[in-house]
Image (tube, rainbow, N blue to C red; front, side, top):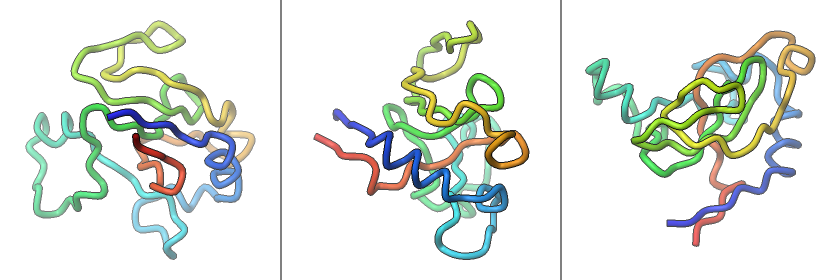
Length: 124
C-alpha cells in the first residue's frame, strides 16, 4: 500500500500544539496520540487488552518519532534495520524531519512514538 503525508499541513498542526499535548492522557481530543510499535508490543509482552488498535503502528505504516535527537521526524516501520541521518540503525526507513528543534518550539525534547492523524495521510 502506498501512502503520502501532507508534510506542510502536518507541520502547521504540530506547531499549534504544546508540550503537554504530547503526554499520554493529555486533556482534550486535540492531543497527539502516543503509539506503540508492533515490535515493542511483542518484545516486551505488553498487555494487548490495554492498547487500542489506533495506537498500534504496523509494518509499512508511517509515524512520528524523535529519530535523530531533539527533532520530530516521519519514519516508516520496517522489519529490516536502516540507518537514520546520524548513522544509527533503526527499525524503519527515515522519510523526513518535520520539526528540527523541539526544544525551541515545545520547551523540551520529545521522546516516544506518535500516530500521524488520518487527515494528513492519503493512501493509494
